Length: 145
Image 1 (cartoon, rainbow, N blue to C red):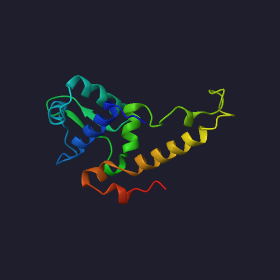
Image 2 (cartoon, one colour):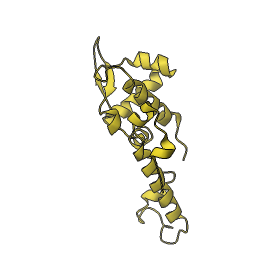
Image 3 (spheres, rainbow, N blue to C red):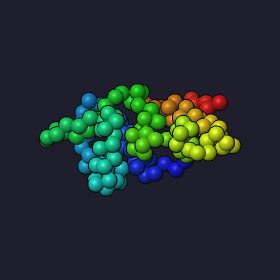
Image 4 (cartoon, helix red, strand yellow):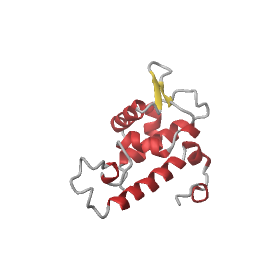
């Protein structure tokens, strides 16, 4: 699975916003763009997808900006990647219901992809923004067995 810059930047953006001293405060996108070295235009596109997923909320005006839509411990990396990338599956096969793929009934690899998809889902769903902010040891904290 290749997570694009959009997915990686989305996680960095949310961590930047979550790291604010006062998580109730709205953070300027200009400040995030400077700290994260992301162009404002690209940042706006990414934040729009995060807002659609209700991972951030916005406020217009002088004291406006963005803040988390949920507590850091409620937002998983899977939520972020799904919002930014549209999904987390490494291939289309895990979503295959048999009707969209003519080979699904005789495909020898479909179980492999479904298992990999499940492992990725469990791992990314087990890690939250709070875990990353706290510097939690992810190898100890998350088991994909």
